[in-house]
Every structure is written in structure tokens, then in C-alpha cells.
Amino acid sequence: MSTSRPKEVFQEISPADFFYRNRDIAGFSNPSRAIYSAIRELTENSLDACEVHQIPPDIYVRLSVEGETPQLVSAPPEEGEEEEEAKPFPGVRTYTLRVADNGSGVPAEFIPSAFGQILYGSKYQMRQMRGTFGLGGKMAILYGQITTHRPAKITSSTGNDKIHVFEIMTDIQKNRPIILGSDKLENERGWHGTIVEFSIEGDYIRAMPKLLEYFKQTAMVTPYANVTFVDPDGRLYRFIRATTKMPQPPKEILPHPYGVDVETIRRIINVTDAEDMMDFLTTHFHRVGKSIAKRFLDATEIDPAENPTELKPQEIVSLVQAMKNFGGFLPPDASVLSPLGEDLLEAGIKKELNPEFIAVETRKPSAYSGFPFIVEAGIAYGGDVPRTGSILLFRFANRIPLLYDEASDVTYKVIHTTMNWNRYKVAQDTPLALVIHICSTKIPYKTVGKEFIADRPEVEKEILKAVREVSRKLASYLTRKESIERERKRIDVFSRYLPKIARFSTELAGRKKEPDINPLLRSLIRYAKETRKRPRLDEEEERDDNQ
Ligand code: ADP
Ligand code: MG
Image (tube, rainbow, N blue to C red):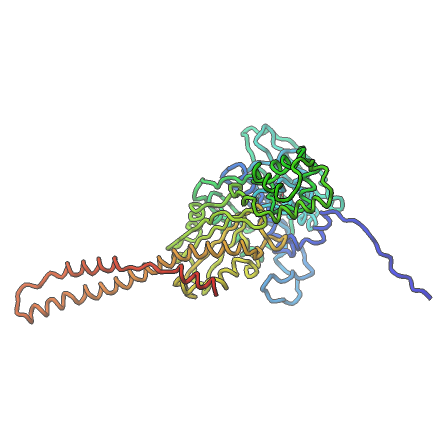
């Protein structure tokens, strides 16, 4: 007797459907994360849209309550929270989220797809942007749709004579936008920017601490932005720009030979006009000029006259291997990166932390697997920096604050295991904050959630160097402060007792006139200034490295 087996069902799902089923991998795992991620993704789109055109951002975020949603299940616990008994969670509500910016705007023909089709966007080129996956903003809108079943309203203009308004939803199974309505308004004042408005279910009460931290840190790393947030209780949070100076906008670059794989080469071959290998290498790859291309071809025995479109599959594989093994390519050019720079980093830290002492450092460009990156570090001591019993760590990647999974991040490893803080006069209760910014055309994130950075040795080394550099400056400041303090005490003692000693010894000697003690005090102060020492850290650091 044969038992009937269940029949396998094969089907294809669209990208929208995939992310609908797996929304947690994009940061939408529960109502509180959903609110946090939605606001964050839209704010980042707005910042990107301003920065590409060097417009000092004015961003307005408003979250308002629409009504209460009865909840039958308990919200899953947040990271680090104890699992509670299942009970309806009172904070889950339907909100309206509205984010407005003065950025580039989106051309009308791209609006429906840019906001209603997953994996569609303008940031897939090799350049430094916050957005990378063509996903974030739309995940927020999609999450809104699946929790409230209402359309999103997008209003945008690139600054021409029309403002376009669209009401859209996403056909999740087909991954296509559905346009429910559209309108064109006269743009009399030449406004440019984008307003995104939609309904979303979430838990603001639980999201609040992280969200406010997100805004604060964003303000730190974008000191040229005005960001206003109005929360559901009507509370107003304003982060006002400290400067209108903006970093250079990122440029787009060609792939670097060390970073390509077979698929990249195959795609380039499909579109190339190059008729020989010389031409192919010099037009499509980053920092490959004629002489380097020639040396490469000589070293690999590829015929410079060969037509790239006629390369056989096996030849493409050998070409990629040869590229990886050839030592003669120049490192990627980091002028395409857009670090904050020391002035802006310092302005941002000062504005949000108001410390007693700051040191900042923008490292020279470096590269991992053909991707250029730059590490920037800032250290802030004293003043309003809180004493937390540990070092306060602020992590940023392409100007995005990273707020989750700190302990998995490479920066955490550097700061808590590699650094020997005793050398820098930093004790457990020193009020200290460290700010680390990594910018790259490709940040080595460990996950799609963009929360922490993998420990690539090249990146790790640069972080360590940057942290040491700023820590060294802190150490010499602290040493100076300590010795000034010590001398101040000493001189204090002298100036208290010297007059007495002078008086007694005058009496003892039977004289009338007391000696003048001021020259003696002055020479003590001068001596104190000259003997202030700088710490010798280089040798000690070297010893740490060799251990
Ligand atoms: P990503 O930012 O990863 O590309 P998103 O889904 O967040 O993906 O956004 C999709 C695209 O929509 C962006 O690449 C951009 O072209 C456009 N876009 C989104 N928001 C804005 C905005 N506020 N201003 C201008 N363009 C925007
Ligand atoms: Mg985005």
C-alpha cells in the first residue's frame, strides 16, 4: 500500500513579496523598530537628496496619532529587554508620518517606482551615499501599507514649474506601483524638494529613546542640517545647524580592478564599445591608465589587440584572477569619497556634546578589496560628556548613526579590546566619548539592516590608528592639565606660607624690612611651565602591537 506524498509547490516571488515576508532583515521586525526604521530611512533619503546638490538640508519630520489599534498579541521584546507576559501592548497605534525636505526632488516619471517598487533607486552606482539597496524608504511605505492598507502620498518638485502629487500603493506580488491618483500644481515659487506622507502602525512610546538618540547623532554628523521633529504629543525637537559649510558631494567611480568579479566583467563586456583590451581596461576601470594597462597585459600574456567581446568564459575567469594577483594597480582614488573633514566633525561634536576638550582626525584614504574608505575619529572629554563608567561610543557609516548591535561592531572591538587606555591616562570613570566615522563607496556592513561593520583587517587598522591619534592628543592635554593642577597646588602652598616664613625670619633676624617674595614665586611659576612634559606614547603603542 502506498501512502500519497504531499505535493511540492514551486512558485516565484517578487522582491516586494520577499521583503514583505522577511521584513525583519530590513529593520522592520516589530512595531517599535518599524517606527524607528521608517523615520530613519526617510530622513536619510532627504539628507541624501540635499547633499547631492549641496543644499543645506531643512528637514521636517512629523509623527501624529490617527487612532488606537486594538492589539491582541504582545509586541516582541526589544533587544536587551526581558520577555514579559503576553498582554496587549498599549503603545501600538496608527500614525501618520510626514517627512518634508528641500532636496533635489524626484522627476515625475520616476516618482511611482521610486516610492512603490522595491529595489528601484538612483543610488546603485559606486559612490558614497546613505541609501544603497533601493529599499529603505520603500520598506517604510510598504510596511505602512501592510499595516494600515492606505496609500502613500508623494509630493515632489525638482524646482521646475510643476509640483507633482501622487497617491500610490505597491502591488506586492508583482512589485509594481499602483497609481491611485495624481495631480500637477503650479510651482510659483520654484520650490524643490519632496514630501512623503503615509499611515503606519507602530509603537512610538517604545521607539522614542532610540529615535531621539538617532536625531541627536544625526545632528552631530550633519552639523550643516536643520532637522525638526514633532512627536505625537506635539513635542518639538529642533536640531539647528551650526554651519552652512557642507562636505564635497560624492562622485561616482568606475570599478577598481581589485574589486571586480566575473559577473562585473561580463556585464561590462555586454555594453562596451572597446575594440581591444587596451581600450577596454583604460575606459572601464578605476585608475587604469595606458602604461599600467600595458604592464598588466604584458604580465598576463593577454593579447592587447584581442577584442573583449570575444573573450571566452574561461578567459574571463583568468582575467579576473590576473587582476586580483597583479601588484601594479594604483590604489583607489579617494577623492570620490566625501568625509566630513576635521572642521565639520569638530563643529558637530561641539554642538551636540559640548565637551571641555576635543581632538579630531581625518585619516588618509585607504582601501579594502578595491573599495576606497576613510576613517575619521573624534574624542571628546569633560564638559557635558556624561560619566557613564565606560567610554561613550558614537559610530557612523557614510554619515548614518549606527545605534544597534554596538558590541558586534569592529569599532567596539578596537576600543574595548585592542586599545590600552591606561597609556592615555583614561580611567574607567573618565567622562569620555569617541566618535568614529567610516565613509566608503561600499561600507562592509555585516547585514542588510546596516547596523554594524565587519572587522575587515584594513578597516580595523585604520580605526585603531585614528583612535590612537586622537587619544594621544587627549593624553597630552590631560598630562598638561594634571601638571598645571599640581603646580597650581604647589604654588598655592608656597604663596600661603612664604609670606609667613618671610615675616618670621625677618623677626628672627631682628630686621625691620621683609624681603620681597614675588620674584621667587614668579620663578617657580616659570619653572613649572618649562618642565611640563609630553607623554612618550609611540614606543608603548609599538609594544602593544607586537604583543
Ligand atoms: P535607496 O535610498 O536605497 O536608493 P529608497 O527606497 O530609500 O532606496 O529610495 C529609492 C529612490 O527614491 C532613491 O534612490 C532616490 O532616487 C529616490 N528618493 C527617495 N526619497 C527621496 C527624496 N526625499 N528626495 C529625492 N529622491 C528621493
Ligand atoms: Mg533610502
